[in-house]
Image (cartoon, rainbow, N blue to C red; front, side, top):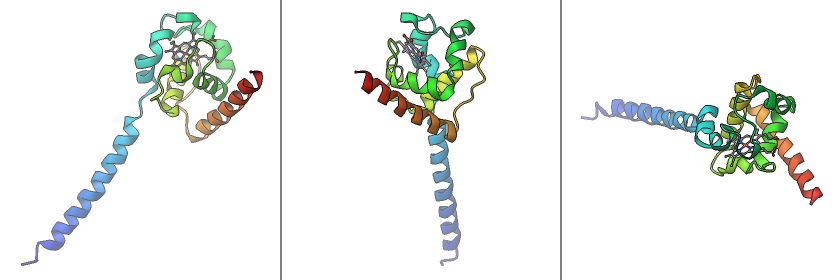
Length: 139
Ligand code: HEC
């Protein structure tokens, strides 16, 4: 009578395990790529260079920015700089997504930046603190 039970339990365990995997997989995938973020958000200003936004793909304009380094430039853009609104004006972006978009734009202008790994994300966060402090002391 109970012969089927262990099998059902095993199936249930497998289903539970796989659906948990599927959920964490979906979470990882739900992070947008740099290209997606660029096309959804940054494009609005950076495609045409609105308000002096460094134009997408313009190597000359991007060279000195790329020279600032990935952590510093990403942090400054995330915090906001002059006409560049904090997070590109899109508060729902995660820092990782935003950083990917910066790397995507840097690559389009000849930079060799990759999507940030955990170490780079830590460096970006550290640079943000430096930037926020220096902005606060200027006021
Ligand atoms: C509302 C317009 C606007 C949007 C949207 C926007 N930017 Fe910008 N961005 C600017 C402007 C203007 C500047 C130039 C700021 C300056 O140097 O005066 C800029 C500068 C930058 C810089 C250079 C920062 C520096 O330190 O000089 C980066 C990197 C950047 N933006 C990334 C992004 C990313 C990534 C997005 C999308 C998530 C984005 N921007 C969306 C307007 C925008």
